[in-house]
Image (cartoon, rainbow, N blue to C red; front, side, top):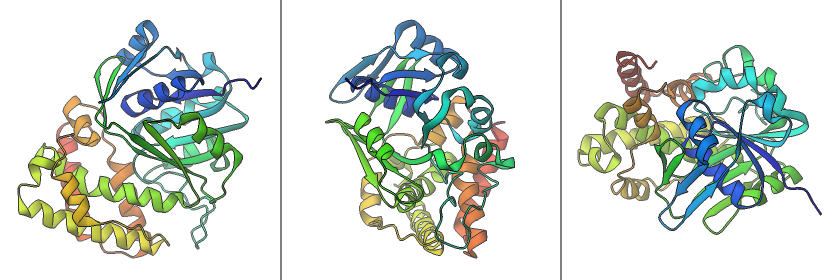
Length: 327
């Protein structure tokens, strides 16, 4: 009989906690690295995830990487500002064959690993200053992850998911359809959780990144969800400009995401969920400015792509975050 996969979620906040509950429901030997009130609540009472159609409960082990030990897979679901602390702590979780899935927003630190263009193995300073993650984990372990799930921690140990069905797109940086990719996708997949394997993870990343680029800055600057700010036509003009700039950056590095902007705007006009970067501002948490926006602009400069709208909005977001002491 095959032993259950040992999976550790590093950062069991909204997205990480949701994924942990899904893995646990499918029989994984589940553990989490979680700090503060969230970690204490999970350790004491377990993890509860509520969706529009079901409630998931589980009791993953909670501990430090040293206490939890070597895993088959580690899922990193922290915010980008926490990556240096992940780099410093993750070593005890890693065995010779441990793969690490990065289920995070923004441009990943491994983006240029196994890249077919002239920038192969280039480091992105805005995401991984000092190569901390590159050195501590190594790009050969990395599996990319693109999450589609609107989640929020409503109380310590409790997560609300807005979607009846969520999705995680998984892919190897080199494009191979590997056995480890199939194993982790199968460990997550279920009726309410799609786990798709792709040979083109970078295009999948850009498809989601375009959404983050277009929604986050305006949400922060207006302190409102898309349904509210899209009542102003100027916001739609800005969003269309951001999509155009983002598409040009993606194309400069060989990606051509297919996005129906009119359909995306139609969906956004109904969205009352506050983007995660606005939730961070509301709750006084470090904001993912560099990992999402700084890295995108770093790539724009590298590819020679002008980005006047992104430059303006990202600059304003940085000023707003600094005023709140969060950047």
